[in-house]
Image 1 (cartoon, rainbow, N blue to C red):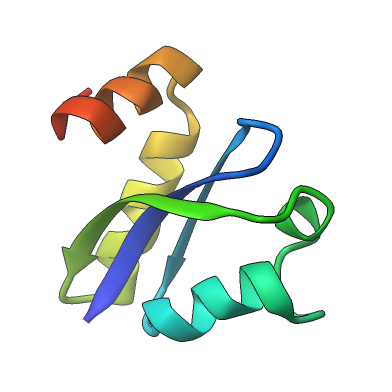
Image 2 (cartoon, one colour; image 1 turned 90 degrees about the vertical axis):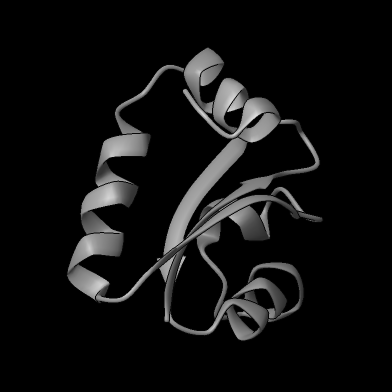
Length: 83
């Protein structure tokens, strides 16, 4: 499976990403030099939302869609499971 996820960083900013190994990627964001630079300087990052997809292509399309949203729309997705 492939996942789109939203993290909330220590500074309350949101990070949207996708991966095929969620546990490994979350560990990278919080503990390794392989995490995204954005989250490395804003640790810790907490998982707030995930969606599953069968294909990486579908996950990347959804990631790009969510990244274009306003912060409030992203928060609505986290809180209510919908934009």
